[in-house]
Length: 196
Image (tube, rainbow, N blue to C red; front, side):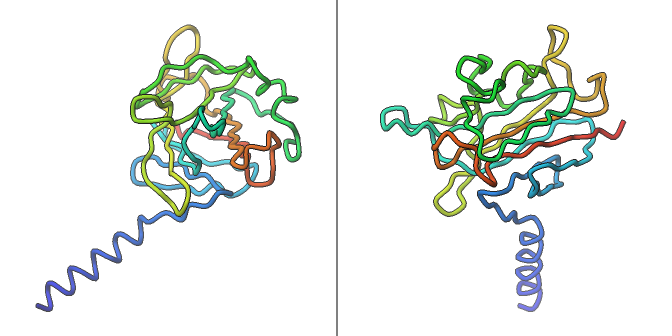
């Protein structure tokens, strides 16, 4: 009986080590078993040159109700210096209508176009119509995951291991209140450095 109780306590302790505290103001980067909380508007992290995921809170895209919940990601090889807070999404050249890249749906691993001329439009409608994975719930929000195996560069998919730079920049926006304005906590300007 003592062994069963000890195993139960150990199991709860181990699960709590890997539990993630999701909020609408943060992102989580997951690589293997490691989790990195992105809590600042501008943040740098170091990863191995391997597949990683960006996890975030949002709601499903509901066209009939005109609730266009989505995330937008600009993936570049240089930092984008722009003051985003309070800006209208439609007034930012990277995110204005017509600048979204056409992406395939239902991919487990993505290779976004490395460019500062347009963005990735990330949404979830259903298991058959999605550009991100639904991996769970946190209160009233769904937890979504966008998995990046590398980038699309030189007219080819480049895994992180053969990507020719040692860093990538991701400007990630989630307009959760659907007001078209970038509010505090709705954007993260990430610099990801690779240990090569």
